[in-house]
Structure formats: structure tokens, C-alpha cells
Length: 311
Image 1: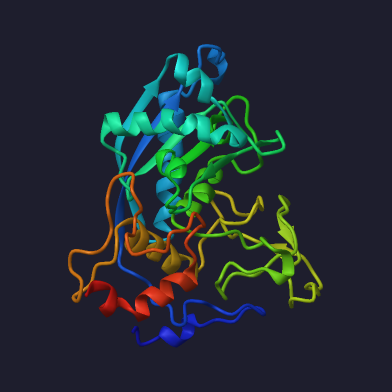
Image 2 (image 1 turned 90 degrees about the horizontal axis):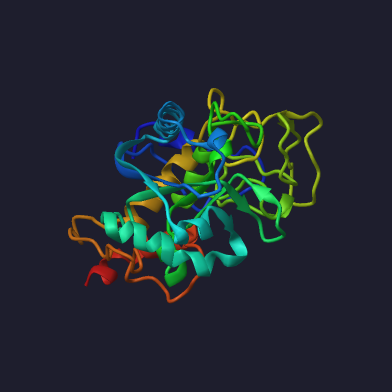
């Protein structure tokens, strides 16, 4: 442990951490491939220009650098055709129908591995109720449908310098979504009685897009007296923008857990080859047969039984 590890045990509000002690991890590098799904009906004004993508890649690199992760861009691809037209408006209710389209793209490029981040740029992303949202990313899951479209699906209008912008923090939405890919959760899910499993992120009663918000003081729903900027990339706040947003120390540790344990498989002196199965199978072969997102407490249980797992 670091000599100052105790300082990372911050208790900013009522939440209990599932990561008992946090030490800043070493830097990691993740391969990233960008796929622009160009519809035959996409107006030229909405095209993703090379300079725009350069800016977005720079924003993503700066954001992930704040969690001690570097990106290595392996490719920037444009896809067209009848199948692509079906997926350029990504409807979450039809994700199962379109998953095979994305899976086919990744297999053609050899990027269908659990620790390779595929980012699909589409015209629009629709929530279950049909409302437009900025994007969606898959947690590490066993579900075959999700394995096919594992990665991030992001609306091009959320990118910086887009002529027809969507949302209030251009460029930062992709950083937020990629946080989910690393297994990070919202600090507002479940309201004041919910938790993201971390203690150095404040819990909020609802998802708000404003610059400032009152945080929860306890699970009863009592709130801080005054609103403050949120800054946390995993929130929806406009204060969590490219210039001001950040990840907490425990979020950094949890993101590296998501990458090293679940997307790359357990690797240690006792288990040097790891347990991960690369490709479109489960990132961790020793996991329970569940389609639910992997939780931090599940990780702790796996760490405690590492020797028996490796045996």
C-alpha cells in the first residue's frame, strides 16, 4: 500500500465503500477503434469531419488520462450499406436485432475482444421510451447479445464542434459513456438510498443536467444546504465538462478493476496467465452465469478467493 493510502479512505457522505483501501494504480493503455455508421439518409451537414473526430479523440484522451488510462487509436472506419442504415438510429429496444451488425464489424477488423474499446458513432441514440440520449455503453457482461455490441454507441451530435449539437457538455459525453465500459456507475442511481459502491463520490437524489446540485447527506433524503458544482464525469451535470470534469480516486481504482480483472482476466503471481477468455465470450470465465453487470463487491469476493480460483 502507498504510505498515504489512509488518505484515500475519504468519507464525504454516508456511503460505504466496497473498495476498502484505494491506491492509485499504474497507467494502462487501451486500444480504441472508431466506427462511423454513415446512413444513406444522413445529411451532409451532419457528416463526421476528420477534424471533428480529431478533437473528440483528444477530448477522450484527456478525460481518460484523468483516470490514468491512455488510449491507442487503432483505426477510424466508415461503414455504409443496407444493414448500416438499420443501426444509424440506435434504438435500445431493438438492440438485440442490431447487435449482430456491430458484432460483424468487429469480427472483420479483429477488434472483437473484451479489452478493445469499440466506439460506434451514430446519428441518434434512443432511450426505451423513444427519447433521444447522448449514448450508451455496455458493462462487461456474459449476455451474447451484449457481447456482440460490447463497446460504446455515441450520437455524433454530442461531439465537440458538431454543427447541430445535442446536450450541454460537448465532447464529455463520450468520456462519461466510456466510464460505464470500465464498469463505473452513476452517482445518482437509486437516489439518496442508492450507491455507486464508492465513498469519495457524493450521492445525488436525481439525475440533473444543471451545473450545480445539492448532494444527499443520508439515505433518508436530507440534502446539503447549498448546491455545488458536481464535476464528476459519471454524473449528468454540465460542470462535468471536458475542462472541469474529473474521476475520483476510488473511481480510478474501480475503472482499473473493470479493465484488469473483468476485461483482461485475473493476472497475478499466483495466476500469471489470468482467467479471461478473449473474444466475444465472457471476459471472466470464473464468473457466475448471470447477465447482470459485474459489481465491485463481486470483485472483492473474487479477490478473496483468488488462490482457489487459480487452482
